[in-house]
Image (cartoon, rainbow, N blue to C red):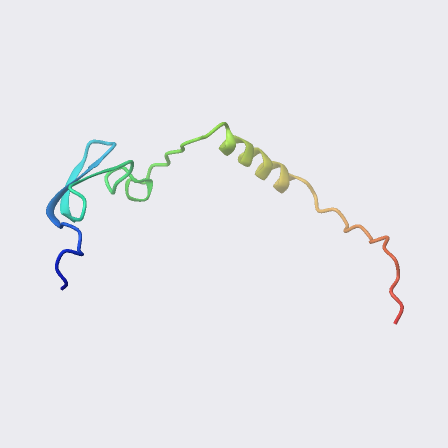
Length: 85
């Protein structure tokens, strides 16, 4: 390895999650803060956790219900010009 070009390595860096869990791993940063970890992630906990910004999830669910409840309509015929060959 070349000297003086690599970042400092912290073998016991502390990672803290918003839920309160802390981990100790090796990293180039001494302290890392994360919003979600294996303890609170929905994939591992089996619980759904929605973070809704301005009602976007509700809007999407309403559109989804509306799209599945309507019948398929016949496609419109194009009223364009005929192309000569």
